[in-house]
Image (cartoon, rainbow, N blue to C red; front, side):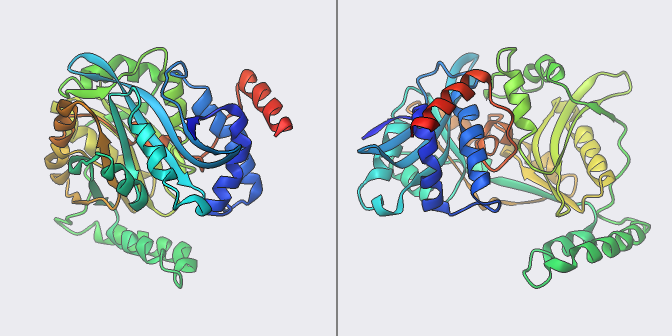
Length: 381
């Protein structure tokens, strides 16, 4: 039976996780944190919890043998508010994979009241089931931008991913950074980062609320940020990575905010951009400020998803454009929404996608109501 997730189901999800993915790096204690704290916090206590769009489970006589997480998010489409469902944690117990459980779960998920369903970091299994049930790939959002900041350090960072060379990364990173500084003295060095005419200040939720609509007004489809959801969204941006996060607003000489960016200072030396927003006429300068800031943090390179409409701007800064290894899938009963996505006429960053629902990231303390209800359910499980 496919039904809506209830708080009593949460303790049972740890066993399903182990069956499908095995124990996480920190063992059982990490699972307890993920499913006793973060999972209820994410899916049962959020600004849209009154929505009928909720996670679904497969119930086999009291045994939870399948799950698909669904998070509602409000969007603006042609100046009208619609609802998007973000999918995550799609899984089925190994012993039940020949019983149509996965098809039934995904079929019910896509039949919900939402106007759009996305899986923006889908793997082979999720993609196969969603596309079989009518979802479409969106190549406009499968484009990745990669910009070396210190080319020799970038090579060292990739080499460190090899099993036999991982131990050498601290040594090679220090040496390669020194070599990069020397090569940067050469005239016309193609990977040099110029000083930006703009400056950075700390990004705040107030700045996001004040400027987001103005900076994304050229897109037909975009998220709805308002006073009711901005605190939750802001908190999730701090959980996008276990690395240090940089959240900066970019201002001109008059102190006017012309854009912002959110990225991680990854220990590997290759940072990921999670959100990039700018006034169209200032996008190039905001991007230049992002590059300068990332280099000042010691990153070897920076990368991120870029929609097709912004490709020329990112390429002009010597960014390497290539196809992402993840698929961006979308399902909608409204063909206009799909057409809008296919031409890249939408703003959907990592902040709006599955990454913001990752159970492997940091969690906050549960609200008292959720903690009380979950403790009672766990005691009776």
